[in-house]
Length: 139
Length: 139
DNA sequence: GTTTTATTTAGAATTATTCTAAATACGCTT
DNA sequence: AAGCGTATTTAGAATAATTCTAAATAAAAC
Ligand SMILES: [Mn+2]
Ligand SMILES: [Mn+2]
Ligand SMILES: [Zn+2]
Ligand SMILES: [Zn+2]
Image 1 (cartoon, helix red, strand yellow):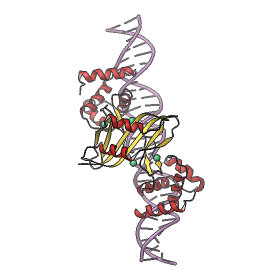
Image 2 (cartoon, helix red, strand yellow):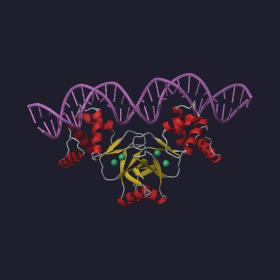
Image 3 (tube, helix red, strand yellow):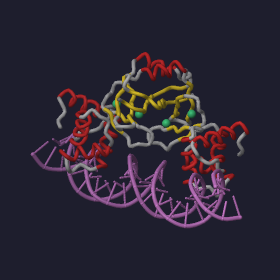
Image 4 (cartoon, protein in one colour):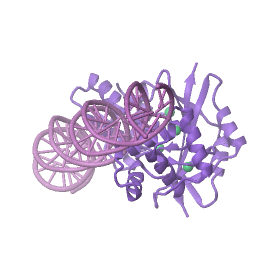
């Protein structure tokens, strides 16, 4: 439930850059997401966070997640119209949703492949963000 | 507002394969989506469809879109948490959302590139569906 | 320590979508 | 062509995820 000094530093720097305050709630939620490296929804994070911070509200969880995304500490992952999930892996990567287990997996993508994908865009398109999502079955 | 005989045939075949009936509403919505090759939301399609079919309901639009997707005549496109959009382009392709205009564009992807992307998956992952979405700015 | 401003909180509101149940249409059999 | 069983349409209610509101609290600046 506590951030290591390495992550504490990252956390404070990242929020600082966006003029956001490093609050207890933001730190707590960030530490929960780092801890269990799955891709939880806001509601799952809400439930987990109440274990050690019973007074936190769902609105705060949404607010904190928004701040963490804005400051670049975590990213959002969306599959179709399911609830948004949150991911602490900052390396560029794709996601795979297993239809059977409902689990989300990180899929590494090589730099050259990513470049090829970006280069598939005609020159009038300037991409800011790319999202690559698979779904299917994992053994 | 009418399907060409080529599309009429495709339409009837595709629904037939899923044991779905070729109703007036389904045909009308399919023709609207083919006509204006943008990526409309259910609500936009609802508004357009009322022009020539004033009695259609929003629930029917949702139902018809679901049938058309199920039978493979159109596909869904989701950007983050925005309303689902619908696309009549059946060739594998990616999508680009321009943040400025709100327009969605089809991005062609070569077969070899698509294969490379699929091959980026470790062997225990069997992909059924891939979604590649860009967003940024288009000149 | 006091003031200023950002954040948290509970609950209400919103939005897209799905559900419900009654009315209607479709397509097969006679 | 009429009748029958089933699928579809329809209007409105319900749902689920997320956002908004406004008052209470906490953090930073002074
Ligand atoms: Mn994103
Ligand atoms: Mn899809
Ligand atoms: Zn991830
Ligand atoms: Zn498209």
